[in-house]
Image 1: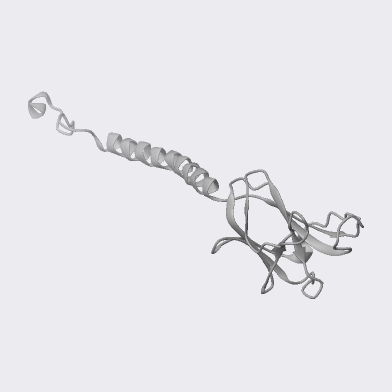
Image 2: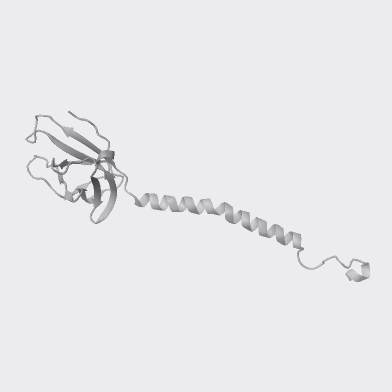
Length: 154
């Protein structure tokens, strides 16, 4: 019918090449727009699995308890409970400071928003040694002892 009317190069059936190109660009722009949404979704998923907490170190010289002078590390304000909390300085596992200063524990549960104090023996205290905080067998954080902020309690 197009020949009869003198329109030989007019396409009556199907989209033209210009429309096809437009469709491909629309698809590409849609895909590029969705990539940041998926990246944000994955970041939120993995951020919820991580436990955030603060580390502090200090040297206590107060006379109110049986240990006269000692170095200590605090694990403070975890975002999730640390069920089997262990802390290593180098290869030495630190003991948690007991409630009555007599029975040190090597493993303790730290509740959400809580905190615990660990005694660092003088023979392993070195600012260039690695401190490793663990929950059971899972390593939560590794940090040099010198990089942990010193609160300077006296």
